[in-house]
Image 1 (cartoon, rainbow, N blue to C red):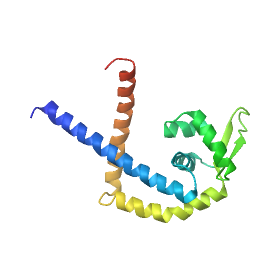
Image 2: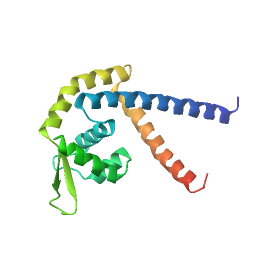
Image 3: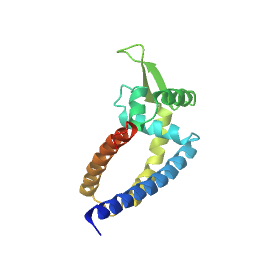
Image 4: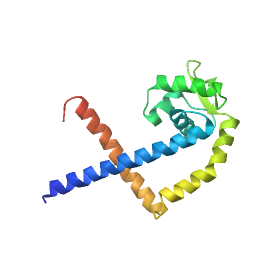
Length: 160
């Protein structure tokens, strides 16, 4: 088999593995969301806020960028999550045109309650990989993600 064929086979196998991982993660996220009585996208929004917020709140645009989704969708869903008392939206002290989004104590308590199960899931999913291996894998995946965005852009404008 030629080198290009090996590369194409490896790339195809990689893509199908990512599809499988994505499918499994989607199921896990749906399970977490069900436990809280919210949708999977709402769960992901809560997780993004939890990761990004350093104590001052974050903007909906930051959440949208993290999740690679439309900011208008984030606005719509954060309003619903605020009504459900999972987060607060306050006017930014730096610019009154923007809202700062933060998790409520209720949301933090729910996430903490789920953390033991999340730790067990992570141990199962990443069993056999040490910290160094995960760091290496994350660096490579980050590079592939960046390159896939570039490839997608090239494809959309007809350069590929």
